[in-house]
Length: 501
Image 1 (cartoon, rainbow, N blue to C red):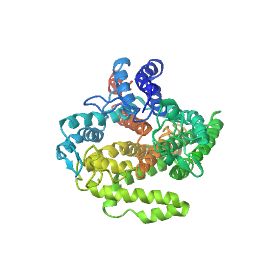
Image 2: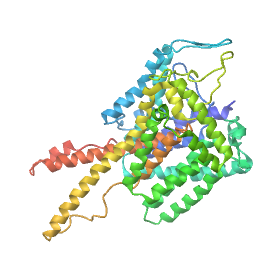
Image 3: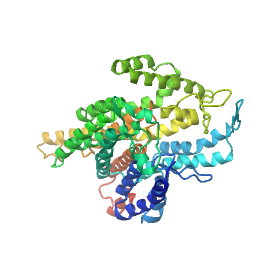
Image 4: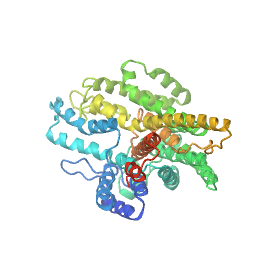
């Protein structure tokens, strides 16, 4: 069980958040509040469990504390709701659809030796609160992380977090994953799952070695994005950080993250910004359509397992185990396809006598669709995917405007007129492509794993905020170009979109 230090860390983190927002710009305070909590606080089962509230752990407690600090500390409250009408609908459905899940799951599940109660009014209150708390980081990132500088701050924070975390990672690679046990008094997962390839797979203060490996991958891609975008003296340091984090990732002994690193790294290195976003949009669409593909038997599971077996028989066995359980749980989910089975493990198959769970849910997608059904699935993953598609839309508009400008400049050149500006710089952020790629691959990793983390929502919110900023600039530019030449300057200022903070 968690010791007193684990409880104290959870109690003190809201104070840390308050000091960060007092001493740092709001965007940086948000990044370090969430990232620091994710990396340093004790994982479940360390939590505070209050009536009618979700358990406050290393993910939910910082989100709630940040919202309170933002409301009462910042001189100007950020606008939480997004501009996009579709995003508002998805957000409302995601937060409120558990009410329909509760109403359609009032019956208990009865077994010979036990029963599982049906859902009732308390759940209809607690679960919408839980879902709202889950997306607070996303909503605040959308409001506070909108600019190119904010994107760079996020990438640098991820890289620094990965470099700092590499020290306890290397310690656990050598001594076995014991830091959470030594510091917080308990072991957060099965020790047998940390033994891999003749050595150990580290965990530090995260829930599982897969989560740790994926965080190192995120830090690696952040360093790679910074190296490609930078042209100053820091570029060599970013390259060294990339190479070092790549070596650390290999020591994490997780095959899937190595595959992602190779694929995502090639996309970031060799593709342009628009192509990167298109790849990310394709990955997000695949994630959203995956249950429909499963329903139509269009997922080549046998071929995927065969490819894995060519690399490692052990990994192929693990993957096949996941797929078999996934198929069983998906069949169970389709018994209540619209709003799902709800909480308390009702989405699992159980032994008819003892009521013990007989299935294992690894992928986040099967958990969501089993618990909340198609409605909850499309709402939650739609919120994650929407920023990528909004960025893609704004890049298309920017490309059209750039082509129009180039045609106009060529016309001026024919008249011996000087060019309006250098055509080699389109003024777009060099970080939106890599961030979109990072989000797209994270969504794909939620097929075999449940790697939804605070960094997922941070990246999604940052892309969302930047897409809205680009849209406002585009609309304002169109209004300005359509306005009469003698438009009053004061009136233009009134119509100009204001920065949220």
